[in-house]
Image 1 (tube, rainbow, N blue to C red):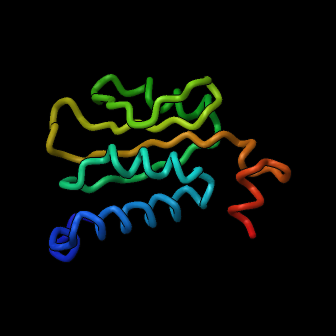
Image 2: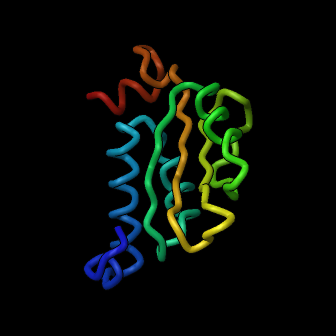
Length: 121
């Protein structure tokens, strides 16, 4: 979202765009409070690539493999299987590419989960 049109938007409009992009990319699986927390934590002056994980193992494997990245927590889980989010960026090129990694518990996609019905209707 780093372009001239986005940079001219008001803070409210930027937040609305970011919330929409997060909701689409996460397939509507984040709870409203999680969406807001992530949107507020992501700086507006950088463009991000968003990665979604539904495997806790895969999420942590990806983050632990590359020792050349700096990790900034965005959404800290209370329990190991709760939703989590971090921003990563290269230590060698701090102004370079940034990525937002989001783990969403697989239970969110199962029928009967309280978030499932509200997001799928």
